[in-house]
Every structure is written in C-alpha cells, then in structure tokens.
Image (cartoon, rainbow, N blue to C red; front, side, top):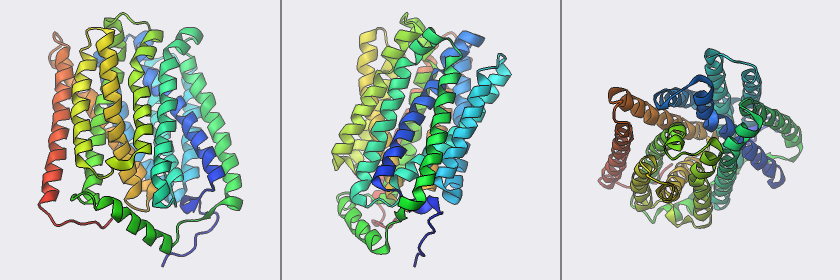
Length: 417
C-alpha cells in the first residue's frame, strides 16, 4: 500500500486547479522563450557566421542528439528530486547561458551556449508535463493534456511568427536577451509557486480512485484490439519521425526563404503556418477524443506527414507552401498528441515518461537533419536529394508502425499498464 506523501515531496503532489493555472502560464512562457531561441538560431548562424543549408542541418542534428540525452536525465531528475526543482534548475541554466550568449562574438562560444541551453531545456518540459498530469483522474487527463498542447503550441507559433521581425527590429542580440529575461521571470514565478504548494497541495490519487481510473480507461481502450502498451510504443516510434520532419523543415527554412525571396520577417509569417495549424489540431483532438486507441488515425497522420513534408521542401511558390503546411500541422498534431497522451495515460511515473517522450523528440530532431546533411554532402549538386533521403527515412517509420500493429494483432490482448 502506498504511504501518504510528505507535503514537501513535490514530485508526487497534486496542485490545486488555481495553482495549475500558474503551471500553464509557465508552460506558455517556456514555449515562447525556447522557440524564439532554438527555432530562429539558424537565421542567426546564417547571418552571423555564414552557415549554409549543410551547416545548419549538422547543427540541428547535434542539438537534437544533445536534447535526447538531456530529456532522459531531466525526466529522471524531475522524478527523483521533484518537478519544480527540476524546472527551476532548467530555467536557471538557460537564463545564465542566454545572458552569456548575448555578450559573445565567436562561434565556439555560441555553440557552447546552445548546448548548455539544451541541457536546461531538457529539465523543463518533462517537469511541466508531469505537473500538469500528476494525480489527475482519467476523466480530466484528456482535458489537461489537451490544454497543455494548445498552450505550448500557441506560444511557440507566436514566437516563430514574430521571431524574424524581432531580429530585424531589435537586432541579433534580442535572440538572447528576450528568452533570457523570460527564463528569469519563469524562475521567479516557479519559486513563488513552490512557496504556495505546501499549504494548498493535496495527496496524489488514492488507490480507490486509481482503480476507478483503471476501469474507466479500459472502457475507452476496449474499442481497439491493440493493447495499450502497443499504442504507447507506436506513439513513441511515430513522434521521433514527426520531429525528424519538423527539425529538417526548421533547419532549412533560411534556404527555403531565400528560394522564395522572403525576408526573415516574412519567412516568420509564412513558415509558421504549420505551427498555428498544429495548435488548431490540438484543440480539435482535445475536444474530440474519438481518436484514442485508433490505429488508422495514427497511420493516416504519418502518411499525410510524409506527403506534406515533401511538398513543403519542394514548394515552387507560396500557395503550395501554405497548403502543404496546413496538412503538415494537422498530421504532426495528432502524432505528438498521441505520444504525450499515451505517455501520461500509461502509468504513474509522469516525470520519467515525460522524459522518454521528450527524448523521442530529441532522437527525431537528430536523425532527420543528420540524414539530410549526409545526402547534401554526398550529392551537393542536387539539394533535393536531402529532401528525398529524409522522406525515405519517414517511410521507414511508417513500416515500423505497421510492423508493431501486425505483430500485436497476432498476440493475446494485454490491457495491463
């Protein structure tokens, strides 16, 4: 039998609804700050150090690899030391790193800042996901995860939309100073939140409630012949491939903008459409849970992602770019939502599962740009080869989904979590 947690054990306490509102504010600020820096850094390296498409793809691969390990460690730290402690540590690291970056001029120094900030970011997202989901009855978990997705995606979309205009208006140094200031605000807000938790938090879900959640969950899952564990594995497989595509698109956005004669300001406007579409898709899938434990939704989303990815990178004009981004946003929205929802629905170690969910993002963020860079290096005369090389890797992910589905169909159904 689980013993009652101490009020100081913040890793397994349930926040009151009022204090969870503060967590959503932290999430929104974190999305804006990290998107400002990590999505627009490729425009910075192009303008400051003359990076081309190949160099930015290599940089994206390195950052993705670092984030994979940082997320695993961040999730473990959050689970053992407490969610807010991990979040505060991450914000402190990012604030210090970004402040230092605003004063640096050399490439080595900026590369060091990037990887330090990746470590900090790896401590924040698993902790936020756990703070939002911990102790929620399953009837509210869908709402919490849905609201979480809408909040961070809208914050990120707003940041990417305005990032180019910000750099044009306030200069390249704003890429560091604005996120650093936001990290400092988040740190202060998290300290305040921690001071209020001891008096207002409640113990995590009781064993009776946990049993009721399990019965409710089974009523949802019984609609599918595929076990919940397999859906979790499929979602953890699909999400890295979604971020494989996302980070390839982001890394080559400066080159795409040059091809379509877009300034950084207008590149931010037109290249952020998929992010707003993803936010709208999150809202749709939040309000309509009929996609839960439905394989065809995950499969069709992966297929649509491949097609729209190719169209984005080969767009001959703005009309095709806009249409492809709309399809891309919808498809990756469902894939990400599946990974996070099944992660939070599959057990009690929210911090660990959040870390694995984010690590999968890091793996995809590394693999896609790495494959694109390799193809571009081997065939520099035909830059489109990198697009098709990444698309081929996406088809590998599709094959993996089908294999997991058919493999599970041949086994007895296991609904245990």
